[in-house]
Image 1 (cartoon, rainbow, N blue to C red):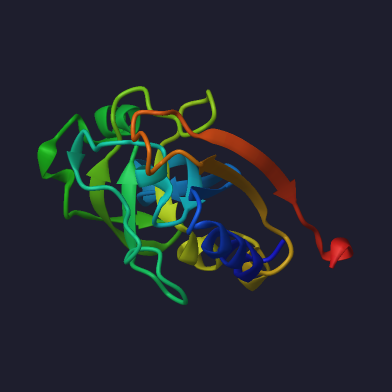
Image 2 (tube, one colour):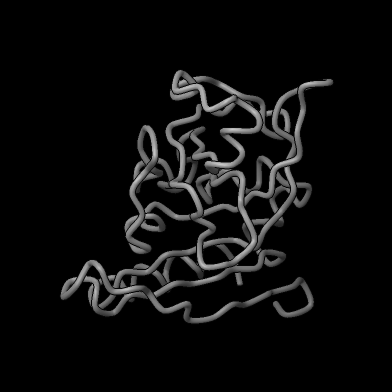
Amino acid sequence: MSLATVVALRDNLSPVASVAVQSFTTQLNVGRGSDAATARSVFVDGSYFRTLGVRPALGRLLSDDDARLPDGQLAAVIGFGFWQRQFGGDSTVIGREVSVASERVRVVGVAPEGFNGPGTRPLDLWLPLTLGGRLTFLGPRWATTAARWLFAIDAAASVSSSRAPLVAGATRATAAAS
């Protein structure tokens, strides 16, 4: 399923539900040389954290402006554990530029301790979905047919913000499927 199709699906559902879009996990290098670390990373849309009811441990979370098509912002939210391991829990990490897969990305926030998105394995890095083609080995194909997506839908978002969203489904689209 292409990025454009995913965004259209999300936008068509938005009048009746809050929808979060997340790519499946990819490994990205953060830092350079001997300071580099491998980060379990996902690409998300601007409503991701809001739909999942997440508040930052520090700074802010990704927003619609960060993930606005076509280019978005060079912004990142780092995981709490990654913040502790790589940055020693230093609060001045907010606003710092770090190298992510050879791109300079600004850290805008730290996810709360224990937050892993809809999954159970710890995540280190959340990036706007608009950066996927720039930061992954798939390049432009990332946004066309080679991406995998996970959707979280909270149909009761307007009724109760404390209700946990439903992970609605996952899809993998390949070049052969298009």
